[in-house]
Length: 150
Image (tube, rainbow, N blue to C red; front, side, top):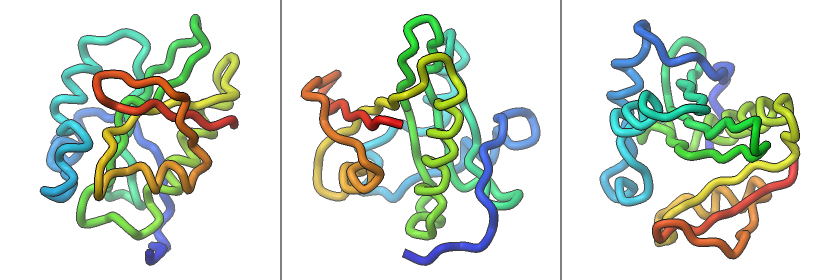
């Protein structure tokens, strides 16, 4: 992994960057692990209590994150997370997850983050484990749920 020196930030998805976010994609062999961003944005549009952000390195969108942001249940679920194939292994994903965790900590009861992943070779499980996520034992639509205490 090579760390890129550009600062990572989470930016609202709006008219200025939505096309760039939609154009981001993972490698072909990773497509089985995450939905395309256009699909995620459509789901976000039709769902309440969702928080979507472009992951930017400097001014360049390099990834996307979508969080179920339910303050009533006080359960914060990273619904989608991806880094574009061109920008993987540069430290952007790790820094972006730290920023997502920082955001969750500001939410009522934001002491734990959840996510789910499709298991398989080349999948995101090792990355999530490196961030401290452990399996909860739950499975949703063939995806394993994991959580980390913040």
